Image (cartoon, rainbow over all chains, first blue to last red; front, side):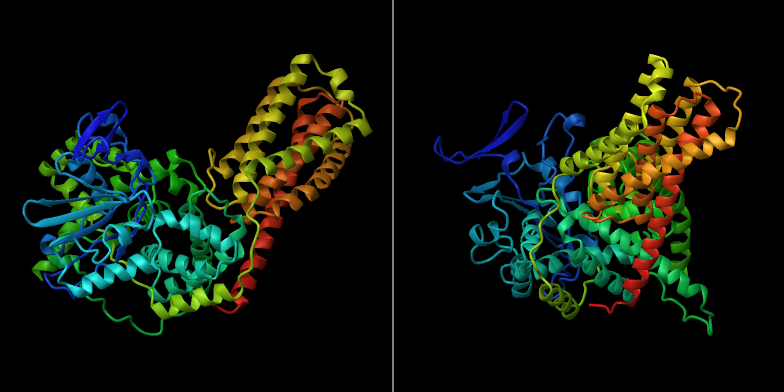
Length: 354
Length: 266
């Protein structure tokens, strides 16, 4: 297997000979769920859930070496094992990671896609699978087991979890197709879309300071509204900005409604003390804690970027603003977060000391 | 590479280049920031029962729908309506202003109105479909158009002494508003095919577009070239119609919110 440089982009070529399949990374289309596992060396500890993301369009202007241009719709499925101390990397990390190390490792290419596997520092094992046929590699590349080779095959729960999620949750690439089927009144489409998008939407609402109950209500209302305006989705357009634009509107309406209610409420008793935040133990403030201090607009942008996994362009579409405005908000948010960090660190250090 | 550069790279959304990683190794704050941002928020998984209930509820009411037509069709419809209304009314009332204005004034004011109309149509079409690309913020665009047209009018026309200023202004405002209302009805018929998320914003933009139809008609019809008259009674029509659209949008949104609030959950 070799990676050949071919003008503006590189191709992956099989060493099987001239008759071997030739793939261009540009042609590989797979937008899939990314699963990040936080196993504590047991099969039962698959608790991290799903992280949906789309790889950001990779700008090759800054790198000259080990660069593969990745289309904006390309994403990867990542199985990660044995992360140190339960630390989970940024959802966008695999993209960067893959780009950095694609040359270093030999990808396995089959008719339905390619897979990459490697180890980092002898502790973590990653496997990235990509396919030009959405949703197919799970069945064709790994017909019996979908867990990394020689890694977790003897962990039945992890395997079943993977299989279940691959089967029941459509990839982000599939969302376009499912939306079209939804418009055509395919009875399977609602469950597929609801299953695929609800975790991310719930995360979006939760990170916008909504309680679990409120988030559940907002989620229901979002789906109601999506159902009502499903004709306004244009086939071929990205689904995520369409969904998030509606979710954002529902959140704004929900916020206004709840504010009206809370204005007329009177506190009858003291609230119970909140448990110590988890980050007190870890010293690093959690994403939620840190982002909570941001103004609404900045928090929304950072949440969509980091939790929803949207690109700048998609966030701009979802918020009815421009890419420049989103960049500016994100920039200000990061500056503000940086200023907040020492305070947070001190507080968390105090919490840890107590 | 310093902390500011790291923020800049982060805000671009691109994968972190090596210099950033190197800087993060030596900078505690950056390291902590990256670590926090890179650790995803734990996602609460919705209960399967709730999801099933939502999916079943959606599937129960499922009927095929026709997707929204491409944006260019709607843009064509808006422009067609605008041009038709202005042409018909000017044809009916007479283009006296064209004969009085200099070619520069005519070209400048009509070009400004045409560009403003094009931008507003683009914005309206984008607002019809959630998640559309916006090259300009809709709110800023509406404000920007109003200010730009006002500046162009103030630069092109001079302040003159005018008898019966308010009487003339009222005549123009009445005629312009009538034309704006005439244009607003077909605009609304087109708009209702989409799914507007912010009704006040869309209402204001649609009102401004309708008002610009009235303003365009007045600019071609009214031979009064007094700058104050043009600003107050010609541009005033656009502003009035925009405010009316905003008010209608706000009312519609409040009614919609109440009806959603009353409706039972899934």
